[in-house]
Length: 72
Image: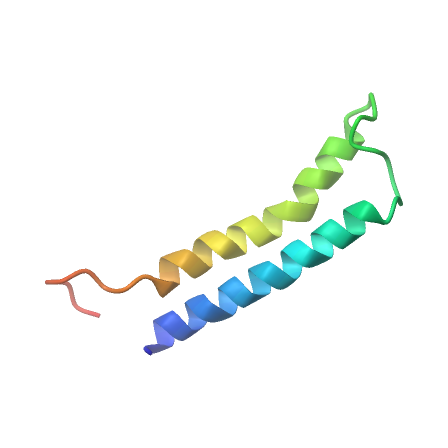
């Protein structure tokens, strides 16, 4: 496993941890509900899962195998 793939695996693990933390923070009941008319609940839900989504994208990009014909 190359260093790039190891970094991708680490990003995927951090994404899983961050997604779990985001789900727990949304189910606690602190803050506005998702159907709040001001829109703050939806913004909170998006913010809770934005970092895990970015980590997932970066992890998948780093974890992919190099294409044939390209230097590693």
